[in-house]
Length: 165
Image 1: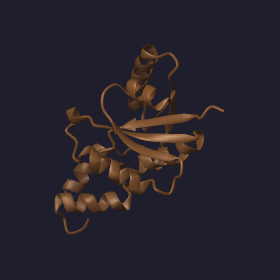
Image 2: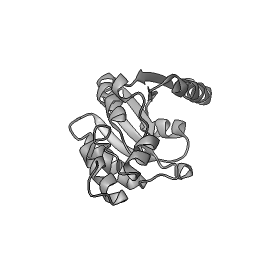
Image 3: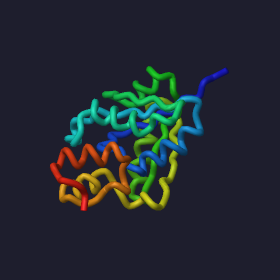
Image 4: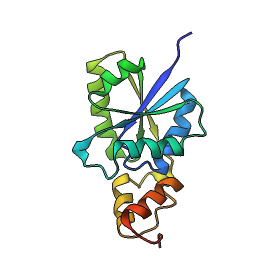
């Protein structure tokens, strides 16, 4: 029997409730789902890859078929190492689609056996991005409704705010 492994790649800097929504719904589609945290130093992440992996592991510990790992290099090469053939990608707004569509076609060109599945996030999270969350947190705004509790604590500590307003 073939084991169906899905890969949900991203920077996750930090993981948001929108990401968790995709993880929760996406993990039902696969025997095993790997949340693959891209090292992506080019994006100048707020949190190290080790911190991001740790935050995601804590936020997803209730799911038995979820693994959280970091990777660098081409996603297709990582997919081959994991023996996975499905990439799960979340979409928030229509502008996400153009980028994701290009990536899916590129990945298909690199390996025609790899499929990309798009999943829309819940409307509650469609307007929020990690970039916006970091700016709100930096300015002392309350992001607790948009990130898991462990991430909110890390943001409070990082930006040295007593608590969110």
